[in-house]
Amino acid sequence: MRRAAFTLLELIFVIVIMGILAKFGVELLSQTYRSFILSSVNNRLQSQSEAAVESIASRLQYRIKDSVIARKNSGNPNDFQALASSNYGNTATILEWIGSDIDGFRGDSAPLWSGIIDLNLSTQNTLVSPMTDTTAINTLIGILSDGNSSSINDAALYFIGSDSDINNYGWNGALTDHNGTMHPVRRDPAVGKESVFIPTRGDNGVDNNFSGVDVYEYYQLAWSAYAVVHTPADGNLTLYYDYQPWKGEKYSDANRKKAVIMENVDTFRFKAVGSIIKIQVCVKTDLIEDYSLCKEKTVF
Image (cartoon, rainbow, N blue to C red; front, side, top):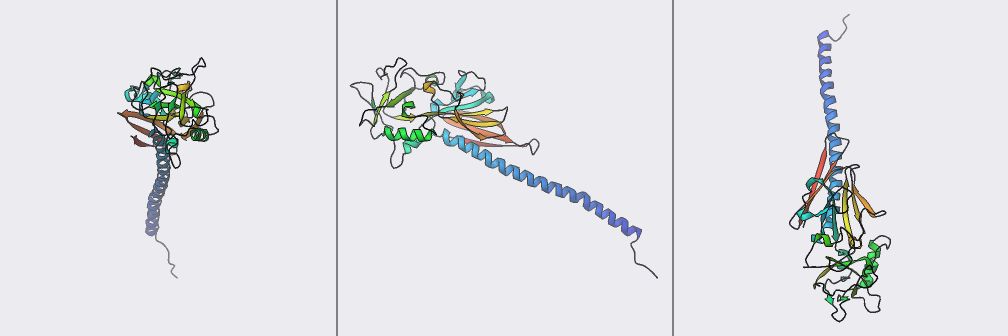
């Protein structure tokens, strides 16, 4: 009787085929898995970096343009430069600016502050802003400051068209008079005076006034400065807010309000071209060696 069986040649042929399939099959499976990981990580980093630059840009677009400064992470509060003329280059890790109160200007059905000002010439110590509701502004600032930590009495006015000196925003200390660029104001407590701003008191407790100060017709109201800080040590990109430089406050003060915009940030770059600001956020991941992704945004 004859039995059907594989010949030695057939067995060798099958083994060779299986070896080829094993070699390239494992490589194909490995590459497919790597492509999946790369695609997943790329999509996540794309989404996170896009959200980071959009978050920064959404606040930067309502900045008081001449107020933007760059800082190096040196711990020296007086070590800053106007971003438009900064020579810090890639050594700057902190972007800081004063923001206009866009929420109050938009209001609900009408602006809460009109942006138009007039000086009471009889006393020179009150500013009249037609169609402005300081009571409503005070309420809104309390809500936006997350716990009523700020009010309209912490606000300041910036006169559009006035001469701007980067040292007169309060970046290097509190403003003690109204010769600076920012003009600290408070609400007039008198009934029926909702459209009146009063200059804040000086260190001596006496009301300041606008005698000898240039007052322009148009203004912007501000109640907070903002700082975006990159700490290379932990890779965090953090937004600080609800502080008033014109009162001598700094983002680095204890218990300052902050929110982490993004983690694992490799680099945070920014520069000014005229009044335009370009920002770049680059992120990295430990899942893939030597892989990073950058997003850029131009803010007009």
